[in-house]
Figure 1 (cartoon, rainbow, N blue to C red):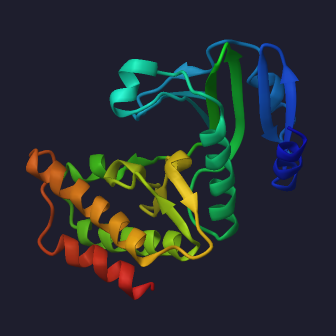
Figure 2 (tube, helix red, strand yellow; figure 1 turned 180 degrees about the vertical axis):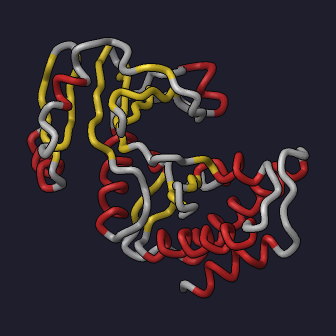
Figure 3 (cartoon, one colour; figure 1 turned 30 degrees about the horizontal axis):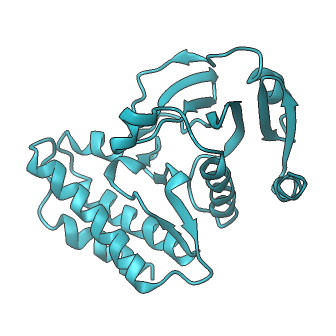
Length: 238
């Protein structure tokens, strides 16, 4: 625990035990430890959708109650065997931000242990006026190719830092108010000292497949040349 605390302190976080919770929070925002420990369910419901329940707790902060995805969602729901994934997300997020890559800053992590399981909430900065790329592409627009080209640049920048997002798909890209792409859900990301080319290709293939899947379901209509636009953005930034 001491080693973990030192590691987090170097990233600007503090750790406090406030029964029944343990809270990891930004030292620059000490009020967060009380804010996230004084009630069982944090914040108010929003229309924001995702793998986890998302609520607003301050005008510029959102909280996610973490749940498993896929088959594990039905079996274990919000129960996790430890907080390793959340700590990895915190560290990868801080690392990408230090490299000027757009991803929401994690402000706090709260967890409660019940037996062998942990129940986890993650508090992040809100990306104002944001919309995920899938939702944006549902309505035809004249800037689809430009946005996919920008997304290709973003993915290249992420890869250049050595980060591999194992679940990179169209819903894990947010567009801010100025339509700049942000990468999210970094609990599925890992850092490498030198990201292998095979993983880069796998990441790109997964992202392109996610677009094809939603087009096949008639949810979006991709513009002509969409794949070339993404790859052009990726390679022009390489």
